[in-house]
Image (spheres, rainbow, N blue to C red):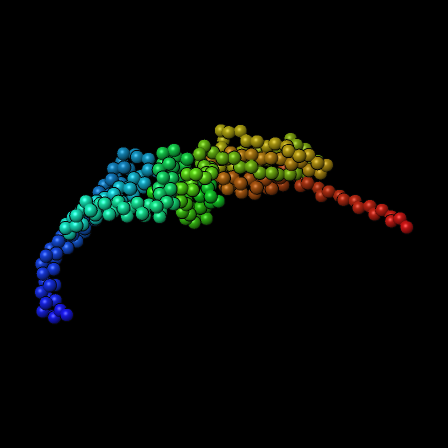
Length: 274
């Protein structure tokens, strides 16, 4: 059993032998982290000034940060006297084991690369994927962040995005708002169509350089049904939808266009045979 004097001597010997290295390693780590932060800020500024695709920027910055931090850890291990060659071999073996255990994460990483190369969508696009719809806020190493219309943040793994169906609503810069309206048959097709076209022309969010459709789709004894198709910017979809619905009712009232008359149903009871 070690006595207190022997323990103190061994502790002092260990401090003498390794204390300086530990302090140097801590100092190197602190300075390294500060240096990495400075480099990352510089790279971010340079990327912005060089007009590098903003979809790629977060991905490259994350990858660069991870690389620098691994290099810093290897350097600190070297300061402590750890054989870096052995450390790299151990790190490689551990990386292989972790890679096998985290195949999904590797698939997400590969998916992120595929998204950045083929660009099915960009930051700022309005997309629908995996049951969610929102604007793309960021494309990161393993996932993509969406901001929904009701201000919720959705994080989707890149693996699923790269292999699944994606609807890029902003892809063409315009979208069609499809609506159905009906009015009483006695009003006549031309009068109803003219009234609807007045509303479309007054809609501030409807494209002015594209022809919109007001099409008769169904005629009955009491009503005429119209498909109304209005083109707008993807971000203005709901503005157009609600504007048209609200002002159609007002315009119909102004133009004395009557609503469809209710259909009359006559029920005839057949006498039962004895």
